[in-house]
Amino acid sequence: MHMENNMSNQTGQLYTPSRILRMAELTRLLGISRSTIYVKINPASKYHDPTFPKPIRLGSASVGWRASAIDEWLMLHTAPAWSEPENKLKELNDDDKTITP
Image (cartoon, rainbow, N blue to C red; front, side, top):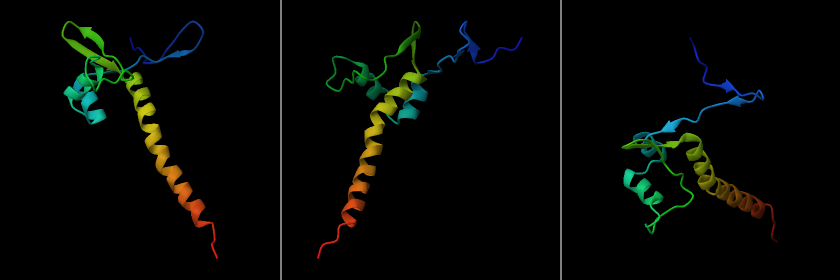
């Protein structure tokens, strides 16, 4: 029997299960080390990031992160970096339009 990835609940809305990222995939995706991830989730660390998604326990010795939570975190932390150069470019273009005698 074939099961689809998207299932319908009683209201007819689609349910898409969140993909789980293991540590190796998370480090590749974010481009940071395992130790940096553990520092970000450690409340006792001076580099603790309370906005970083918490891991979920998968077994007695394994954890993972919901891909959707990581996606949200990335969007929150990369949006200002993307918009800043655009604003600077707009300021430069606006300055070019002013003609001084």
